[in-house]
Length: 250
Image 1 (tube, helix red, strand yellow):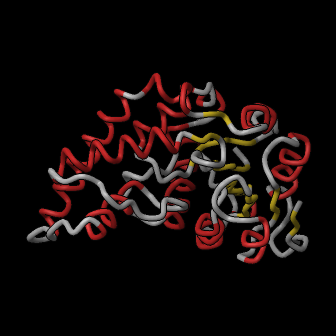
Image 2 (image 1 turned 60 degrees about the vertical axis):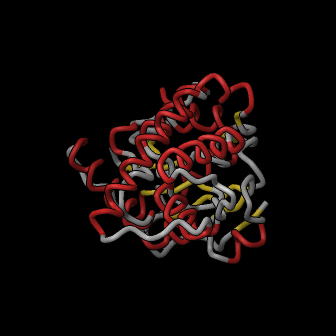
């Protein structure tokens, strides 16, 4: 392994927002015994962040201490996994693969010395289900991924993934050989914190202009131009530090 590409899942590779919202609501109700009347902004947030902010928005009394908070979050993750598993058939019925996603993953997998994984806000069991439902898991090493069940911000998770990859493959990946492909401004900022370059895809809630403004190395409307996306991955993971071109958009 000489280089590493990390993919966000939701609204970068696929869209299962409606299924996810229903699973969030069921898990929240089971844990708190209250309906999920208000849901926070989802873009760039982890499942743990979404739950904790939902507690505040829905006037759920705070836990007695940090241990109780951790216990409540663990119960929520369990319920969220169960609610999502029950909706597995709905993923392809109510969700969709985004344009060019499978083609981009398949083509990037042919680049020499490159390993692909994920950096996502979704808890691991549900991330795996999403990817398997749309036939994407075959291109990814999910053992070294970063997930919403990990209690770290995405920038720190990126550093953790690099450490896991180095341990598994027996070779550290250089700062200038990691690319994060994602769709939100928070994702671009996470890439910067974690020392990675970023290809931003405007298929989420952030516009091309917003993604470019926060400093993405390349902004594309979607992943449909496989040659452009994979060429950018190849180029960005080969450029030495300090040799980046000016940010672009399309």
